Image (cartoon, rainbow, N blue to C red; front, side):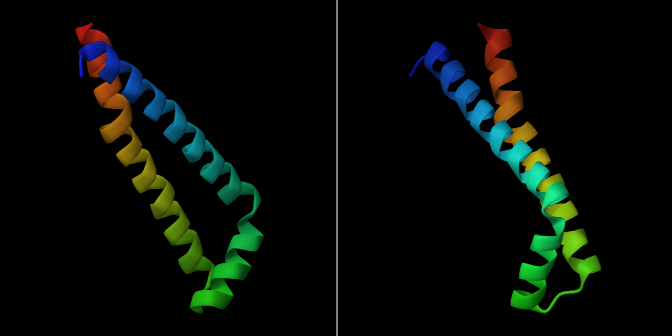
Length: 80
């Protein structure tokens, strides 16, 4: 596996994960009521607890996306 293949792999991985992140964030913003009703019934959680979990999920996903997708791709772009 050479640098060009790795750069292409990380590039597509970044695009796919960015799309999933944007989709998740949009769904969390616009489908908040459905998320709260569904998870409230399934796990007996309050709306405040669900909001905290969703906020944490979006934050962790963003950090993992940057660390494991974006930074390696940028490093490979700089190298080549």
